[in-house]
Picture 1 (tube, rainbow, N blue to C red):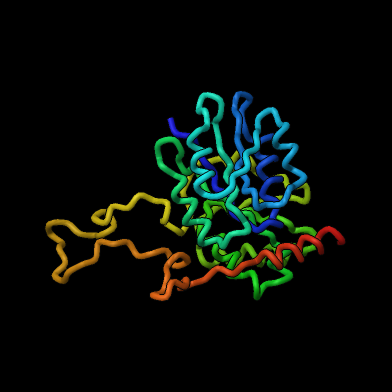
Picture 2: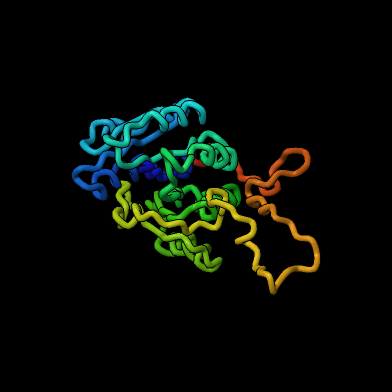
Length: 260
């Protein structure tokens, strides 16, 4: 039986570890145990010790993708029921997504869901610099968590959500309060693919084509899947649709949130 892995995306300021802690405390069964993977590049968080000392949670630091894969493969399925894997926020999101794909082998580890934890305060303060990052979170996520809403009006938060509703994004929405508690943590644990991106999905080129013996195309057709728009590269190696580095704005937003 493979272990369900929840991939957690977001900036360093979004409160991802707090979300994980709350979900561990309020959404797991009495006999469940969840291991939270966090990159060594991430700065310590107030939630780290609370996760490590939790009755239902443990804490693992990983150096890089290779180290993460080895540590995931060494997990004891008889002792661990879930894995929360925080993508390294110091890495470009596109690069981190590609690396995360290699962690999912379908045997020891299966992808349960992808959570995008969005720092709404960062986006509201720096919309021009961070909108593309937020859009990418929406693109890759099965659940979009609206976090760090302190100091924002209801209208500002509604506008952030409305952007993706108007685009008919299929992901679920969750609200995270100032204590980093999720409004519906049990529903957050549902294993359901609702993301736009198909990079983690198995690909059968024939199934993707609407053809049968009575509906054969006259012209040659390509059986290769089109690359994800955020992962596609130009001939020079640059991303066709680059995702910006928001580390500077995440730090500025977090400092502002602490002083308000």
